Image (tube, rainbow, N blue to C red; front, top):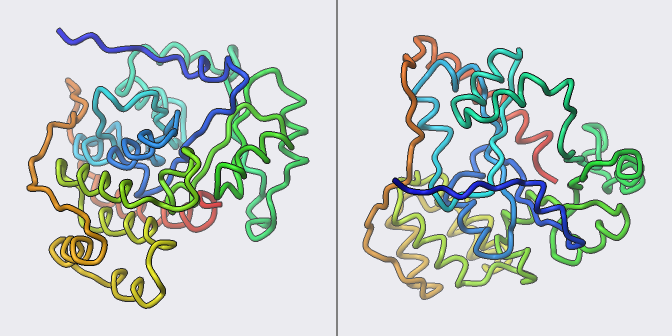
Length: 292
């Protein structure tokens, strides 16, 4: 039987070094991207937000929303729920050991906080570092700060101003998955790694292409982006990468990422309508909350 290493996220905050965190991003914080950013210094990843009720009711939803492997750690699974029962049930499916913690959240308190330094109305304004610092000074648990992180220097600057224990990036790490390693723009080696990862898995074209659009924003000229961004198939994208950027396109050999298996669970009959509602709700979150 395989031995799985257990991680305590709080151990990341036990040193004086700032912790680099990849934000939860709808449609983007999937396994392959989490694997990629960890190659370049990212220490902690979140899944996209998962609707707990659909996750509990539908096996199809679980296989669609949560795919992992033994190297995908440390990882925080982010659930949204309208009631405690759905939240606890979803957490139990992911990690049975977390159930008691979920039941005792109010009594135990939280382990750490993630703070975005803007309200919804302030989305176009600079991050409010004073507000983050006020929160840091008011609690005795680690605080991860989020907002306006586009480079490693931004991480250092936000850490200096707020004294946060961790720094989270969203749009910045989409544009440059190697950001936490100190590189100013996405290196072609990172693009190559993304292509290699996706050729080994079941990544959908939209996910594959969208990530490349972000990664190549500072690599391609405006004219080149206008061509690349409107490519429609894997072959078109791969031919462009090969011809224009000398990216090697490997023969697809899929690996076995693990869908987490569950017992005594039936598919939810209302999944299709739920997922339509979720898509609209997630689009709202994507545009309003999740990007810096």
